[in-house]
Image 1: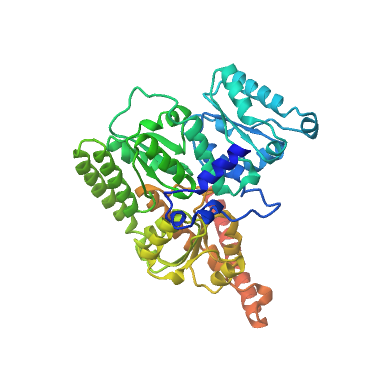
Image 2: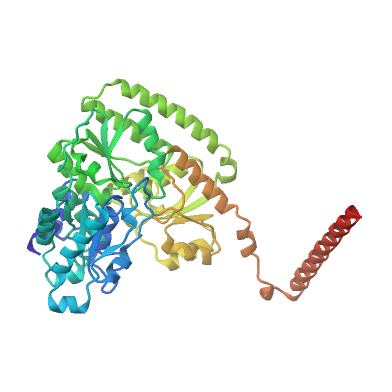
Length: 496
């Protein structure tokens, strides 16, 4: 536990974060995370955060050393997608019982589970996650993993992020530390080149990175490792030989990007693949970093040619949606990189932003939002459900974009809603992703169901209105019956 405490303090002292640099030494040790609510670990603890970052590594076996419920709470909590291996979709747990805890059988059971996974699945590596129970009883996860790695001849990586040590965001960073300590740099590639990059903090939700990777392929840029979206263990182990890196979600993995720059001289920048302008700027910055690291400057010209071609195609497609969306008002209840990148993307096609949350955004994210919106009144740290409901029921927004947790607020307010968080069903990254986002917004806003649900219920109408509704429905039913009768007669005559 002493080594874990030291690691947590190191994570809290993050020089790459401007907000953290502005604190005094005492405040810096406290970190930025709010304390957890007792009993509310599901969906918000450090273990959950570590699993979010590492589970999208698709060819690795993810073993939870804990009672069964811990695995049940964390499995499948991100809509990441894989282009190949499916081992990450298999749930592994040591399933500790009360008897195992009392009899001190935890470490023995863990070693046995590692051996069974190795023999049955033969993965390139096994990641082991302790949780609150196994950390509290003192199981030495790191010692077991080290012994198992020696015995079975494959990497067994301890991810020491039990739930009680902090928030989900802290777990994200501890997962990055595990990769730095046990994975990255452990394999030397034989094909390193001047156009290799890393993409950090990209989760490939709904396969959206697959909309961006073809653009990089056309420029001759190879993604050495995308961490963690659709990743492979070998690629991450070789990630230290990339020439540059792009940070998509700094809230989760800024410590990983900074330390890779310190150790292996891999410069990075924070960018976004949401929206046409931001996608183009990200491609430019990737090319510029590669040129600074020795790549041929001709890539800059090819990048501009690709951007011009793709932007022209995207704007032509978006022109069809502009007349039906221009002036529509959107409320964003999300956070992180989406709090500013989606804002910029929607404003590009004439949509008005009436509010955006910055609950999980960094200082840099907030500065970008202020530059884009130029009105602090449209920025809120956190909006209570009743305030969201009041805003939507008063028709101050035409649609809300958020995660699944707040969808029912919008539905209760009879307002269109679209999921843009990890549970979403459509990819929104890149040029094609922006077109898809706009298409989904247009479909949601103009869905005829909203006109129907906003009409007064028959039992809430005045008597005269009820009679008119009843008469209209009766006439409609009569017309439909007549049409059906006429169609039947026509069929009978045709047969005759």
